[in-house]
Length: 397
Image (tube, rainbow, N blue to C red; front, side):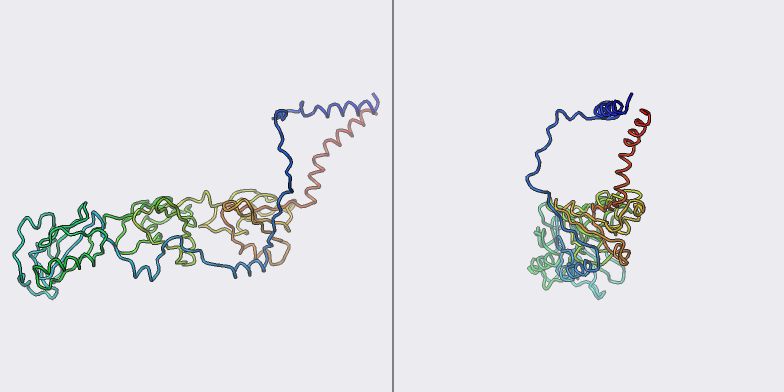
């Protein structure tokens, strides 16, 4: 058999190789390919990761705004707890033990004076109020504990039913003082909330003890709620803590609050808020391309640098990777138009810059293949074919 015959036979076998080769195969005869695009693909600008990039970033740095009302000296000073249904109030009327059902002494330890005007209340008037025992012999306080009824009122002797829901303790005190002034000359009262039962927030997620936290007369912030729930677990994503209010979820960066003390992230909580602390499954970056171990890496408390990502992937493959073209592709959660950054690791300051470049969740780090590696891979693909042709020619001689 001459050379021409062998070459023709080899060409015929090559034409039917796809149908004879083993392995999975999809018949594309019933598939209609998409029409070619009318316009060329969009081009995306590349931002070099160099000293100029960090200068611009520092100049444009603006603290993240508070998504809701945050704790500040002004909001702390203006904060007032509003009484709700189910709360318990403790009411003290100085020098009038008949109104509190206790031994009552004045603030200076002197015996109580008799009521100036008006009869003593009967049993029917004190129904629904719970007297508190007198305090120690040092002349401490005594008072009457009353619970806010379902209709938003409390009952107090010589006053009757009084609307208190939505009022502060000071406003309740002023209302009781005005009411008691009809029967007592210059009454002196003290009203405080001794049982906070009407308002709460739910704290869930990756916490040690998820629970329901009561809102009290001290401002409750998202950081307070997490601490009261035992703190976050090691795999908690504190960068994306959620506060759900009125059906809408707001993202709070508690990691920034802990690391930099950013007060614009310490959200002041309200009744019915739901705080959820997610895990780090959505806070990860992907390292692909010419690295020794392509992988996805979780962010540590919401932070991961480009140096951390490359180290976690086993660094660049020195045989195939091109250190001049290390890309970071960003924008998976915001838009379909990515932001592309490039680091040239052949520059002397690159090792420092990669430790300062902070990645964001779902960033993709890609290391470009070198031109020599692409050429070698092309040779690897055609080498078996060349060897087959060579042996065929040799056999035909």
